[in-house]
Image (tube, rainbow, N blue to C red):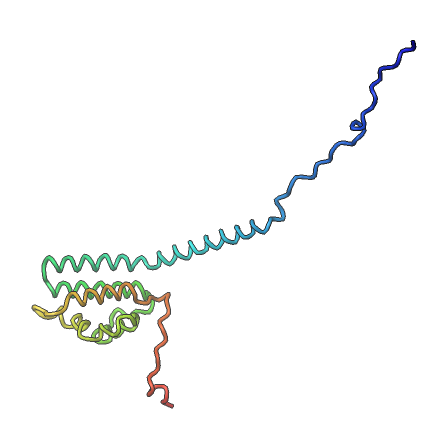
Length: 183
């Protein structure tokens, strides 16, 4: 008998070419989600630096509020109204010099000083120019001044917290009818 050759028959699968894998996925161009994430991160970073700069610019307020609390605590222990008024006036002037380093006139006195305090903080409703603020002008020179220390303390705390500094714009002053019709 003739011998059959035991050659394996070629499988149809052996005749197939190798699989060609696609190239690796590139990082560029970025998908839209990555662009959104980058923009959000940049926005958060910008807001953080703006917040930090604003906070650094207003550190003097926190220092002044702390000193104001110390002045009031000293007054509560000693009940020396004249010393309280002198210290308060000095603190308000230092705060004004810090908030307006180039434009504040440190030699301003009297009613002009009180009007200036009211002008940079409209929220005080001209209270410094009124009876409460007048204590800053006459109280330090009296032997036993009789003033509303608690009201002056609250007014001063409000001024320190809310006054506009040289980086902030003051609201526009509303014209009176007489000013508007004056030609």
